[in-house]
Every structure is written in structure tokens, then in C-alpha cells.
Image 1 (cartoon, one colour):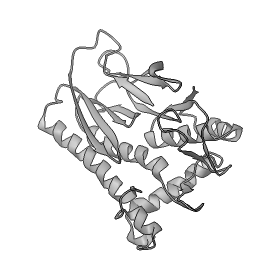
Image 2 (cartoon, one colour):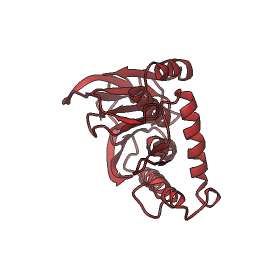
Image 3 (cartoon, rainbow, N blue to C red):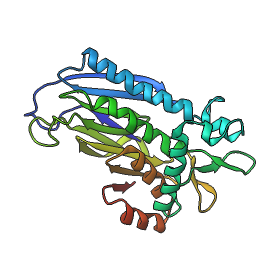
Length: 262
């Protein structure tokens, strides 16, 4: 789990407007935070509304709790892959790629009762949906944003903002101590990038290890920082449930990502 604050890193950065929104989407609270000169503008409101619309649209396709979602209807045999949203085919391909890259430590085939495995891309959809939603916010001139989806974060800014130095709008992100959830183990400062954490502190043994065929219940967490939330989330899960093979795959296949195990 990660938390974040909006305190600026450098005192030379001039004060800017700040505004936050929060909605319950995909079964979790998703907050959108903006910093910039026009956070109260109609354009900002439209961009935020567009971001939430993207998230809700992905939930309609992929939710495993909605009886009418594409994924559930596909699993029940009520529709075909060709009749589903094109995102479903993309999710299948992304899951297969993730399984190969992580050395088998990540999968979209998860237990669905009675010992059966079923297509369930939950482990990648949240990050993917946030990456897509952020495109709406990138259009806001002079504005930096942070999307917090149940503790996983994506941070970015309009192209006219510098990534460092005066004028940059960095965000400080706190990484929670998995053994004491009232404490912050460490912090990072980002102007662009994603932070995803996987572990058992918040939800117990919910992460499935496809190699052993069991859920992992050991304490601790793994946090991954990198360019996109979808891959940060995939790698955080793979590194938490996987062993040496997953760690070797990470070093080989994810040069733009960093991991921290707690």
C-alpha cells in the first residue's frame, strides 16, 4: 500500500492551485489530484470526468463482480471473444506477455471455485485502466496530476512542465510499512511515474502463485516504481509471489523499473 502527500519538495516552487476528487470505481476508492493554475476550470472538470468515465468503462468490461460484464459473460459461455469489447482480446494478449516476461510468476488464470481456473485479468486491469484514464489529464496545460487507485499511484504532468528543477511539481509518495500500517517505511519523490505495491498487509493471502498453485500468505510487500502502472502492478505481484526466477526475469526484462521488498 502506498500513500501520498502534495507537499512540494523545493521551496522555490511557487504556490499553485490544488484540487482533489474521489469516486468509488472498480470496487475501490479512486482519487484524482490536480496541481496547477487552472484546477478549478471547466477544462479540468471535463478532464477529470473523462478519466472517471474511462475507469467506469473498463469496469463494465472486466469486473468479476458484475453479472453483465464481458468477462463474466465470456466465462459463462454467453458470448464469444469476438463479441466482447476489443479490450478483452488485448487483456488476453497482455496477460500472456506478462506470464512470459515474469518467468511464469504472473497469470490471468486464477482460481474460480471447485479447483477450476478461469480467465481473470484483475491483476492487470486496474493499472491498465489508470494508465488509459491519465490520458485525459495530460491535456491540461501547466497541470500535474496524481491518480491514487486503492493505494497504487500514477503521477504525470502536461508536457509543458519540466521534470525537475524550478517549475517542476513533484509529488512525495509514502511507502507503507507492511508490518506496521500506521508507519511509512520510506518515501520517494516523482514528477512522472507509477508506484504499485503488492503484499498481504491489507487483504491477506489474496495473491496467487501459478507455479505452486497456492495463494501466498507470507508477510511483507514488494513495491515497484516505473513508467506505467500496469507493468509496475504486474511486476509487484510477480516479485511478491515468485522466487529467484521472477527476480532474474525482472532484472532482465524491466530495466526501467525499480523494486523494493519490505
